[in-house]
Length: 171
Image (cartoon, rainbow, N blue to C red):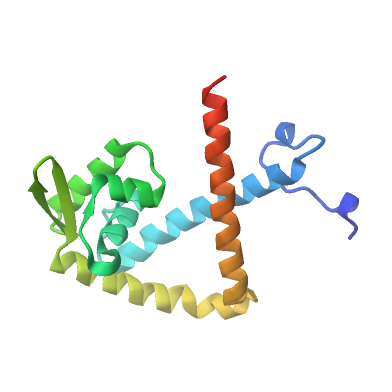
């Protein structure tokens, strides 16, 4: 199908009129991918035995567990590109309450580390992910190299959206 004849798959036609419609198609892809990924994380964590965690809490837990190094609230927000530290703080408080992370206050900073229970949960999650998600990846026809290129493009686009956010804030 030639490019002009290709059907445009967008969520908001009024944003896809004229020049730049491909961006609207990309954004719709982001929307459905984000929602599918959030749903997947929660279903995977449910199968791992912790159904009460939200997608943000799951991301925070995995980030704290990353490389078995303690993290500060600011570190987690930076790595996840989340500006609103209150949402991360709320997630960390819930993870503390559930015994999945521990905290240690040093001066004005609080450092978080995955507890043994939290690390075990991350390992069960990894096993469920391998069984339910990774095992089906070969059927998608997307190679590891292609996934790496997509990830690089998404990081680049995230920078573009961040810059556009700063520009919009100054209007």
